[in-house]
Amino acid sequence: MSQTHEAKVLKLQAQLADIFKESRAVRFKRSSTNSTRQRVAGGNAAEIDLTDLNEIVGLDSAARYIDIEPGVPMDALIAATLQANLMPLVVPEFPGITAGGAVQGGALESSSFKYGQLNDTVLEYEMLLGDGTRIVATPDNEYADLFHGIATSHGSLSLVTRIRLKLEPATKYVALDIRPYGSAAAVTEAIQTHTKENAVDFIEGLLFSETLGAVITGRLTDKAEHPIRRFGRNIDPWYHRYMHQTAAEGGKSITVPLVDYLFRYDKGAFWMGEHLFPLFGVKSNPVTRFFLAPISRTRKLYDGLHAMNVQHEYVVQDFYMDWNDAARIVNYNASGPKIYPVWMCPIKSVTTPQKLSSHYRDGEEMLLNVGIYGQPATGNAVNDTINLEKLILNLPSRKMLYAQTFYSQEDFWTKYDQDWYSGLRTKYKAAPFRELWSKIHTPNSAFKSRRVRGFIQVAVEALWGKNVVWGRK
Ligand SMILES: Cc1cc2nc3c(=O)[nH]c(=O)nc-3n(C[C@H](O)[C@H](O)[C@H](O)COP(=O)(O)OP(=O)(O)OC[C@H]3O[C@@H](n4cnc5c(N)ncnc54)[C@H](O)[C@@H]3O)c2cc1C
Figure 1: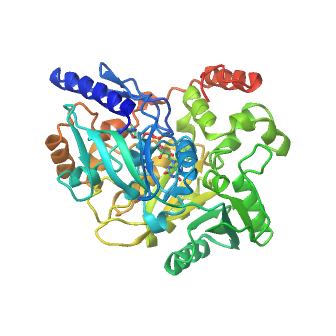
Figure 2: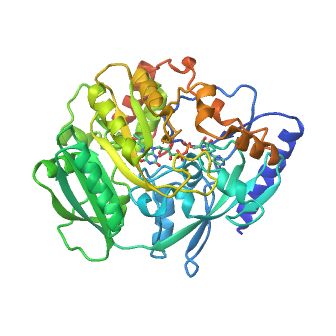
Figure 3: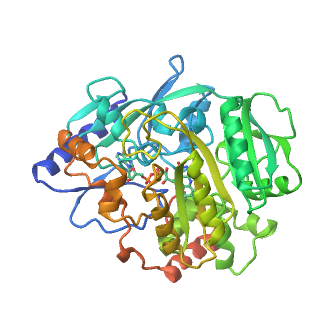
């Protein structure tokens, strides 16, 4: 292990041990978040600074794994692995998502039908328990329960300090096949057929309306078999717009450079960035999209969202649905919110005791993640989110917890095994870490928008074209 990593962990260990002795709560200080939850003041919790826990610790190209600190973002991770012609098996699609956040938040991607969530590709974790004890957990050592249990625990069981991630050979391109379908049912069926055939590396679906959708499959390849189309540069089209137009025109095959594919939704954060243009009093068109490109990437959009605190005006939710229940979310959306596009991403379930994770089930099955991101036609995003939560309350399906969560404590624990969770917290002395429900629950006090102040911050940055407001990229 590198000296600097060792020194950082020793410092954190000592801090945690002191906090534990004083019976205080701890709050993590991190340099970014891709969560849309409103930030709530952390009371008198002791702050632990994790901002420098963001380095690559080592890469073993023969054994095909990389050791990283949890604050390493996806773009830095990819840059490091590509130097060895390797790549992670699951790469969440926003470049600023960190490895630690993805593990603790349960991140999925279009390769999840093969590999599950990013945490399913982890070989071992180095972690600090609540009292500062350092452990290394693997799927089959004495800490296997914690190894599995931390998935989607949102930092409520331990502090992760190093992640050993499995890698696979990388290629130059992804060959994409884009096929249109005339209904949500047809898109869902086509996705299911592809998951059964298992002949591609990536599968996702998009619904653009009740009567038009697309299934986009991808294959890793070193050959540019079709015309090359890029999505990563400012002049390139936004991915969702390109897919919509292509589906409307009957579909086609294209070749996309690997990194452009992995971060294809960065410009516009899927399509949430479309809400930026009215703030500037302009329409979204190729010219305005080009000029506002620097602030329409996910890192900047998240900064703007948190600065303005307007999360409650949007539905931003992902639901891991049992296959036959997926239509319930789609139908609810069509009946009122009418938020389009809708993202559909197949993911295989796990039976290992990741009991907080959205893809934990009794048996092996293919699930369909349905992502609803946007401003609802009903005009009441909070109400729609609550209705969607109620819709899955008594189903095996679960939602991702990165976004607003309105479940009461009682309802929340009907969906998860509270005895198991409390047992892990006691066993691993997790008292200083904030308990899960209180961390992810959205209180009413969070609904205080700072629209004007936040917009001025966003606008100043846009006009000056520098990182003058937040002081970082
Ligand atoms: C429009 C939209 C679409 C989205 N679509 C997807 C999607 O398709 N796939 C997907 O995976 N996600 C998606 N997300 C969710 C988002 O990307 C997640 O929030 C992300 O997975 C978390 O990464 P992060 O690095 O920002 O972590 P954060 O959200 O900041 O952190 C996650 C949790 O982990 C804890 N944590 C972080 N580091 C540590 C550590 N070292 N030790 C212990 N605990 C720690 C944090 O305290 C926090 O509770 C979407 C979000 C939006 C807005």
